[in-house]
Amino acid sequence: MAVTLPLATPLVPSPRPMPEEDAYASWYGRVLGWTVTGGPPVQLVTGVRFDVLELPSDAGAALLRRPVATGPVALMGRRMRFLVAAGGAEELDGLLDWLEWGGVALDLTALGAGGRITAPVPPGHAVRDGSPRGAAVWLRPPEQGCEALLPALSGPGQGAGPDLVRLVSAAATECHRARLRRRTPLRSAVAGPPSRAGRVSP
Image (cartoon, rainbow, N blue to C red):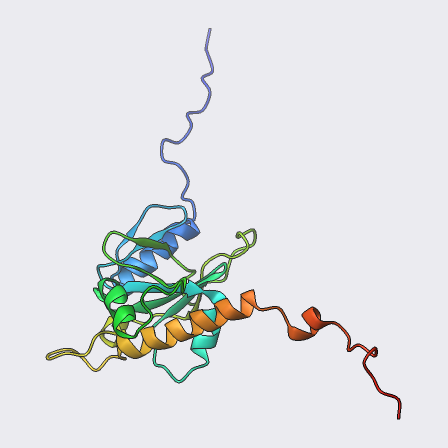
């Protein structure tokens, strides 16, 4: 008696499209040569090709309106991230002291060696549906070779990139102004409508 065997299933799975996270990591690694790790979401490693100055988004928006040269800038939620030359993070505290901002609560921080940030959606890629609100996006996207123009301390043998001192000075000023705005309610809301009790009849 003949026995009918079921058809064998193929051993090679059908190809699947590359996940967006893999595409993001591939773009950062292949096009920019940046170090990525982890995921999802993909993380960009700081301290290798660039460092990051991080500040509140309202202060960052004001900073972008100033005539101060910057490198790539990313936004994630309520934090804005300005890319600076590798090694810049180590200079932040000393620069703030030198600029007489030492000891002032500015909410201005830096990420250098050993740090990481969430990789924003690469230029030309749409933010996918269902992405969490406040997902990282580029406001000023990076380009190949942009590290040569990142804000750095001026010195012998360095490129003609934007000056880190000017950027930190402007960032500190805008962080301080933003903090004062958040703490100071509108005068009209505090005082209320003008009182008529003291008016003198003509």
